[in-house]
Every structure is written in structure tokens, then in C-alpha cells.
Image (cartoon, rainbow, N blue to C red; front, side, top):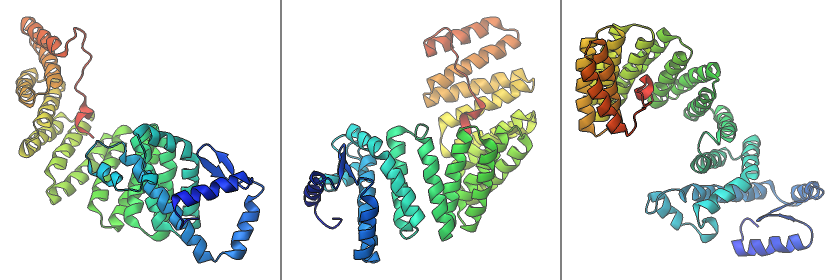
Length: 379
């Protein structure tokens, strides 16, 4: 039936269901358990292996296109994905994002089983990778990566299985990075660290600068999460050197920020301040005013920790000006609060009170819990 029209296939399935050869499950059909081994034996005795594989490939290809439509319906009207969706046959499209989400929810067991079976079979690995990629994107679009984490973990493991079997180092690195990210998000930092290191090896084998840079930075992040500031700074430094060699200025500035955070946690305030100033300069070069203001605010934090309130005050004032120019009201208000704390320590409570009032007015509350966190530039 894989080569016939959708209407003809539907009519045939309805007839089979009427004869008891299939069982309806919502909008789908399933073979009764008692008939499955008989049908398998009949297929093996009458159909050529090449025909069976072609039929499976056609069904999987249709599933891939259906999953692509499922994800595309979540994109804005007029987007390239929606234009591509409109070109698909009507039988593959969805009438709404809700309908697509419902199909994904009810079809989830069959889709996951199809992915596992095609990977285990090993005869259609290219199609298997496309199927898994489409399923991952659809799940992330409808459920979000956090809610879909259990399913995504298994799917990334399947990608890794195929990549290792085929010697595809680039895909292996990508799968390991995705698995490590999920480990890190669920608190399995040691497991994440091991996978980030494995991803680095795979990225190097593939000569993939993105994967190696991403892996080195993530190794640093894992060490930071484990409280090993020295190793974190070392790995951030390696990732930074690669970005500098490739002229990737925005990433270079961001990594200076991560390096500054690691030095701050370690109490190396001189090195932290140099890193944050380098981040400020980097963001200035790429014209990113909000990030420049945040980096300058972190430099002020380091000066505060180092017991240099006068310098902290001047740096905060510069950061407030940048935040104002960037139109970042919440950051501006948070910096006003930091200015107030610094003025209190310098013995000027009246000026401190004025800055607090200004911050409260900007935030629209008298009990603000907003805070500038060192992780604001770490992502």
C-alpha cells in the first residue's frame, strides 16, 4: 500500500478493519497481536527483501514529512517553514498547531518505536537520522526541551548509535553534546563532563571547529558547576583562544565574561577584572550595548568584592549610562540599586536613597528582588 494514493490506502484499511484484520485505535490502525506473526511469515515468504525495504523507506519518508509539517505549523505565518508547509500535500498538513500537537501526543509511542526499529535494523541509517532529527524538532517545538527531555535523551542516544556505527564523527560530536546538555540540566554534572570530553574528541576527529569550541566551553562550564574554578578557567581559556584564532568577536567577548566569572568565584579579582574589561571592549567592538552594560556591571561587582568602592561607584555610573542608552530598564534599575549599596558603604545615605527610589520607580515595585547575576553572560 505504500505506493498507492492516500484515499485508496484509507479505503483498503477500512475494509481490512471491517474484516477484523485490523483494529482501530483512534485515527490509526493496528494489527491484532495474533495476526502479527502470520503476516510477518507471509511477507517473508512472498515479498522480496528489496520490496519490503522500499515499502518501509516510503512509509518512513512520509513520517518524516508529517513530522516536518508538525513542527512547521508552530512557526509564524509567512515564515519560510510555513511557506514550505503550504506546498505539502493536504494529507500531510495540519489545520492548526493544536491538531499537530494532538497528533504528536497520540502518535508518540509509535514514532519512538519507529525510530528505535529503524536504527536497530541498520539498513536505512540516512533515513533514520532524518526521522530522528524531525522528531526531535517537533517535540521541542510543541513540548519544549525540558518537558520532552526523557524522549530527547533516548533519541540523541539513537543518533549516537548510528554515528558510531557509521564512523560519522561530526554527528557523534553533536549527539554527545546534546546528551551532555541534558545530563547537565538534570544535575548529572559528572556524566555531562565525560560526554563533553568525548564530544571534544569526536569534534577533533571531524575537524569541526564549532563542535570543538562548544565542547571546550562546556567542559569549562561543567568544572565551574563542580566548583573547580581553576580547571574551569583553563578550559574557558582554551575555548577563548580558538575563538580569537577564528576572529569570532562576539563569542570571544562572551568567553571573556565566562572567564571573568570563574576568576571571580576563585577570588582572583585582578584576573577577573581584566577579563570583564576585555569583555566590555569586545562587546563595544561588535556594537552590543546591552551586553556591554552587563559586562561593565560585573566589573563593578568585582571591584566591590575587592574592596574598591570608589572605583565600583564610577564603573556602576558608566554601566547605568550604557544601560540607559541600550534601553534596558531592568538592568538600569539593578545598577541603580548597586550604586545605592556602594554609596551606603561610602557614607552617603542620602544619595543612596535617591538611587533606590529611582530603581523602585523603574521596576514598579518597592520590594525588588531583581539581581544582576554572574551567569548573565555565561550562556
